[in-house]
Length: 111
Image 1: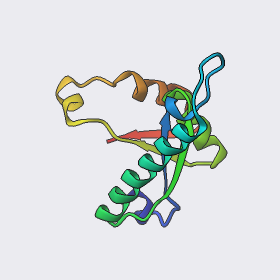
Image 2: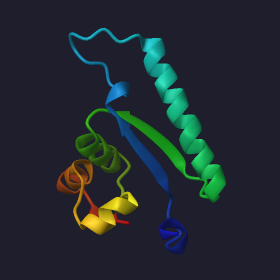
Image 3: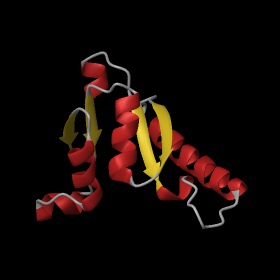
């Protein structure tokens, strides 16, 4: 709704530590490609089910820094992050949400 309201481009950024090679740890490149394919498929289904039609950008690394870096590369004007319904009851930000807000190069809206 944000993107449509302001006629803006929308990109879904998903960060996963499993997509990033780690020094000293043996990770099969095919395994990482498989994880990426599963993530793309799931996000693609969400895109289709909601009619959003967003671009998808998968990034490797710790979510707070990786999502913020990707937003910077995209020159994002605003970063919209979602939180589980359980967070509303607690009224607190989870670790990843807080880290994204802390490192973001732009305004962040949490829904």
